[in-house]
Length: 142
View 1 (spheres, rainbow, N blue to C red):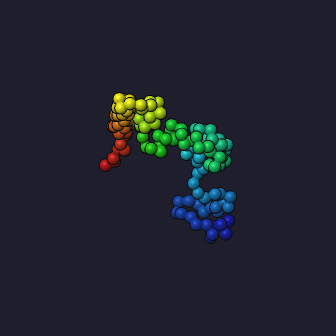
View 2 (view 1 turned 120 degrees about the vertical axis):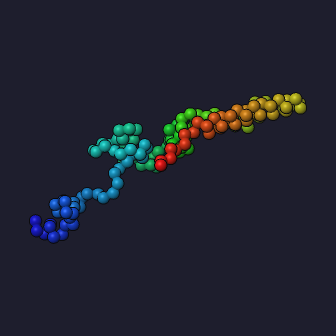
View 3 (view 1 turned 90 degrees about the vertical axis):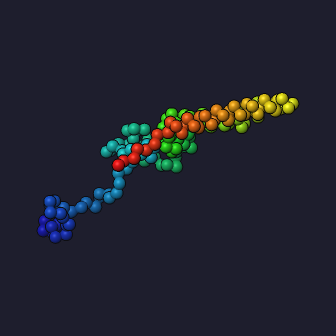
């Protein structure tokens, strides 16, 4: 016991103890999917069900299309993200769908197609403004 006391670094309120060589220094192990801590001895995440030893390379690209991952990546609330997605759909309709659906044969057809595009673009602008207004701002702490 005397060799332990000489070699151990101790504080005034703790008895001297030898550190185990099997203990791993570092941070706790967290889930790759939802970033929560694993429970002690568990093989799967208790929140999302991801396996503990799952490799990130085994994840599919569809993970990035999940609603909560997009919401977290963009930092938007649910309502703001829905307004943003509606705006993107309106832009796609204005740019691609109107041109593919309607054929232009006369000048009147051209004006009608341009009017449809303007309506979709105005819808996109309204959705983006709604998304900006619905976005939650981080509260400042005094």
